[in-house]
Image (cartoon, one colour):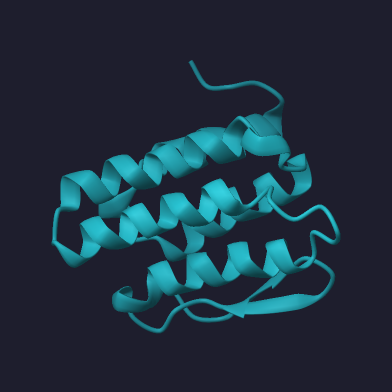
Length: 124
């Protein structure tokens, strides 16, 4: 996955060159959104904490726990936990699909969301 993704007010985040960089890219995307948050800091703290949990599992090579923790992050984004703005949550959710290896998250959630967005209804 190479290329650029535009994130919040024209900022760019490079898609990682190798699988080892995916978590750093995801963390960078969250930090960029946090920097754009303005004076109401705090919305992104739980998301950063969740990515730190992912990092711990990744360091321990616990693939099942990385998968569960990344899907928890996607749950958080879908539910806009901690008052996250829908546009930001959608952007980060979509970026997760771009950078996270399929073995570490439920790719079908992204596909279902794409279909719903394109056709206005979830698939049965």
